[in-house]
Amino acid sequence: MDIREEKSGSGGRYVATVEGHEAEMTYSRASPRLIIIDHTGVPDALRGKGAGQALAAHAVEEARAGGWKIIPLCPFFKAQTLRHPEWADVIK
Image (cartoon, rainbow, N blue to C red; front, side, top):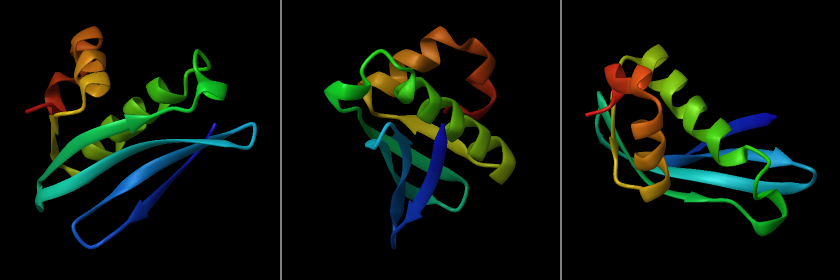
């Protein structure tokens, strides 16, 4: 699954492209060491194909690589953190 990051002034989004459809996970940067994941959007065409899970795992990998923490405001991402206790090192 191809996941790319699009950055804006105070945040950005991770975008997964699958079969011509885009799923996204948006975030805002609260500080140099803290991001807030606030939304995950998966179109109906990609439901059940793991796009949301892939975006969540990608965000965790990016946080680990960048040395920052994540505040999970998005209900989907928050639910994923409860299913993945191994992500606790980057969840605030």
